[in-house]
Image (tube, rainbow, N blue to C red; front, side, top):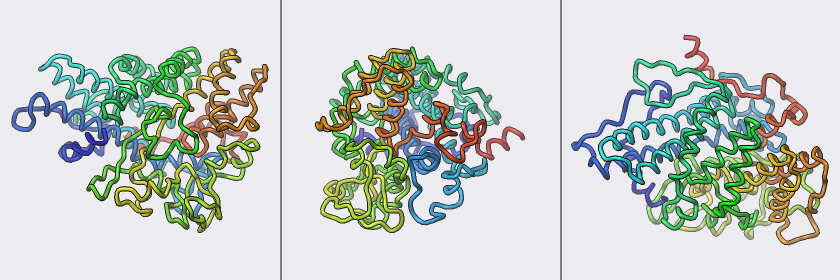
Length: 486
């Protein structure tokens, strides 16, 4: 898909991009004067879907603030006040609805929903004229995926939000606000339907058409949704389907998961495309580079701003000899790629955002490029395996839970059997804590920690400024509150 996205970038510039996400004029009318009524129409739908996918890549700034800096894993790095007033409110949970970060996250997800709805409207017109085709059904499945993924993220962060499943007319000022459970019950049947019309990851790789939704990406959103609803039976059903599909595995070394050579590899459930090859005049970066830039070394080599760095609490949480520590923590004075890291401020960095020097020098790139070419990895396979372990534990199947936990720890050992001993407990409470610890370490400095603490009901025990009854959800943006009042 990297090739397809590049070819479609010109087309995308012709597709309008609504900024008023809940008040959108009808779109999607075609005639022979603007696009061919077969291939051209399909290309326009595909371009709209790509805009939907790219909407998720634009959210790196609010994700760092909302899902990283709020946790006991993440230190903001940099000098005091770096990132601005709004950004600096998240480590202390002192944010208010007027914090612009919420507008960015809320708006970015509704932009994805808008693009999905536009694509579905266009597909309805196409199917009326041409009948159902394999490509049309796949694109419909992708639109359902994009919309479901955005609503999962919105309900995860805000709870009840406006539900929009169509292109709204100018006269429609506000969509109905539904509870998180109501919204999830809307998108789950669509996403379950979509699975059969999506390709596997391996099929995508074989076609060279990577970067779009796959069967396991759809299953992952379904499983996560059931996990948040505490429906462990259905969660297990879909995590098991992913594990047994053979489409993903844990063969990628932990320290290499985020390298360019492993994009769309067996660890990948869902990631967003990016590319940067100056020598070939290829630049498909959107805002995907924001994650690498925000997390990169601040100092020498000059690779970023140093946000989302490991806290002392996180570093102390690693078991002795756990190889994931050195794959996650980069510190001042470390020698990497023949260079000695020198920090300007805070002395630690997120090593998962460090891209090898050889990769940085390809295709005419340079360090200043800040990882423009690096795909934004949103869901990876280890997350799914640990979700399965957690759900199995909650259902009382400790044998299954320990087997899945061992899969993660075995990969993490990297062949050193003297570290990370197999978990043997037969006590459910002890096993639950072991699985929670494993999620913290395995997914450290990624995107899961805050919402994990909240759904486990222990955020107030881990985060000093967390207020029960207040911080389980983020506040809706003030602009949306004002719209509801008016």
